[in-house]
Image 1: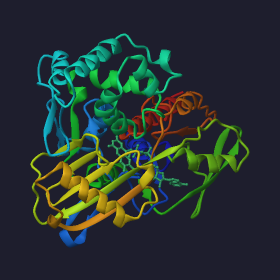
Image 2: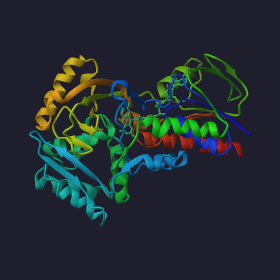
Image 3: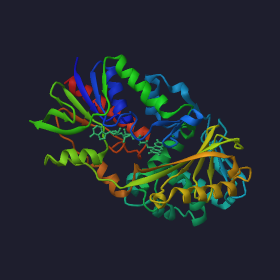
Image 4: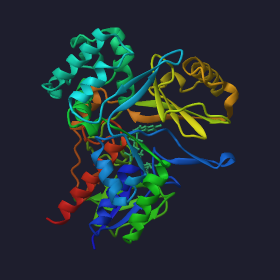
Length: 431
Ligand SMILES: Cc1cc2nc3c(=O)[nH]c(=O)nc-3n(C[C@H](O)[C@H](O)[C@H](O)COP(=O)(O)OP(=O)(O)OC[C@H]3O[C@@H](n4cnc5c(N)ncnc54)[C@H](O)[C@@H]3O)c2cc1C
């Protein structure tokens, strides 16, 4: 049995470890934190016996690698999958506008959804449809030197349409502004979501907490195949010899008995470890952006839908979890160091403006989580740097949402990178 050490217990490391275990590798997974899941995990609010995540994670129908992965670990049934795209957008005063595609007649159903999205004027809707028709013959490589904002201007999308339609999509999908995001990566994901079948545009929400969906069943799967998981153990350095890793040195042990190593830690952690050793593989350096999550536990819950997108509000999304609602603000740089009391005051006020049915008096308790390094910014520089990643070691492979998957910083990118790294190990071992 070949032995592989996987470092990092986020979704990339878990995916790598699961796929290697499936192919009868003996896996030892090393994770510095006491918990698995990396940037996506669950917590419990004891007072209400309620589970909540460190941030609402949305999956989409186009997350095919994630859906396959959940199938392997046996939790795909714990997802709520829309039949076709359906989002309720809310304007000040509480008026709801539906962006809803019928579940048949693709691709006309998606055009129908836009044509009937009455939050914006008909002329703007027609321009958006025009944009999507152009997207069919768009080659993302041709626009790799443009930002999304520049690209939308070239495509004659006016400021109002950008603000009330495109910005919501861009900030939601890329967690950054149209001025920073790379047009090429945005075009890629638009093509994947809207031009590859109706199911790809469906929104998928977990019915359970992220840890119950991903981390815990992955752990069970790996252990059931004889693998070992060491939490609270940190990779400190590698020792190299003849272009191979010969020792994996952690704060607790020195490992020499292995055939392969997969590093599934964030790029900045890997840079530190490799830099220390004056070896020069190319590892991109990213800028990161923040996601702010506000949780409100309610005595009375007046919300009827599963989730809402807000138009022209500080709040981007409201998710209804019954006992609590979670509020997401993406690209939340301006809130990074903001005082929590001030944030709550602003949020209560916006909620009351957008949802007249909501009263601050319904709130029993609140919580704020600021994820300051939630996702890397998929700007033009990072798109180039990811393509140049060069890792020439015989037995060391890399995974992580930041590797060159062509996807933004998402669960799908992490899971795909883990699967790719496992496949690379398997290919190498059969040489
Ligand atoms: C608030 C929030 C909301 C998000 N929303 C969405 C969403 O809606 N949809 C979506 O698809 N994605 C979303 N994401 C992004 C998604 O969570 C990440 O892309 C994904 O979890 C990254 O997984 P990863 O395994 O690549 O990295 P990570 O999760 O960062 O995992 C890396 C792991 O390596 C460990 N590690 C680091 N250094 C060492 C070391 N020296 N030794 C051992 N272990 C080490 C870390 O502790 C960590 O567990 C969101 C992220 C956040 C924070």
